[in-house]
Image (cartoon, rainbow, N blue to C red; front, side, top):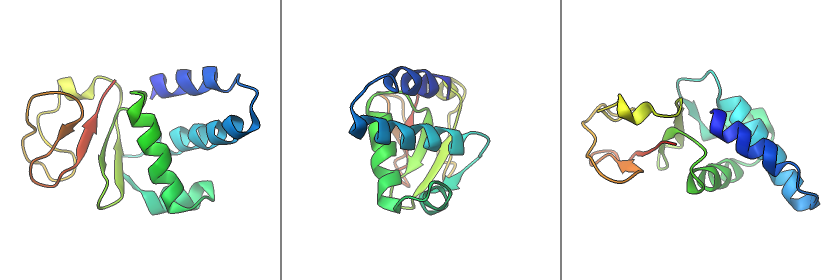
Amino acid sequence: MTAGGIYLYARGEQRDSAHISETSIQRRLVDALGGNVSVTFTKLAEQLDVPTAEIGAQLHGLTAIDVLPAAINWEAGIVYPKPGGYLVETAACLHCGQPLPDGEIPHVCPVCRTEHYDV
């Protein structure tokens, strides 16, 4: 989560109001993820008072720029936040427990399609 915080802190220096609003949501999202073993998109949306679709969009954005270490089951709408480097010690899917394939990140579980991102 540290990488996400550093990215969002630096990005918060931008002056464009559209980016500040998005950055604010991302900061609140990263804060809301901290301390959870798993959390649904719906629960996060309630905590941040935004539409559920906004949570998915923000998670896509954060994973696309490699600042959010987490496993995400997009179909079920569940995120499993983890500390950076977690995939070094994790051989099984955090959603279903099946072995993860080696390869490029994100590792995609062949059974439940959960995507595992790391930084």
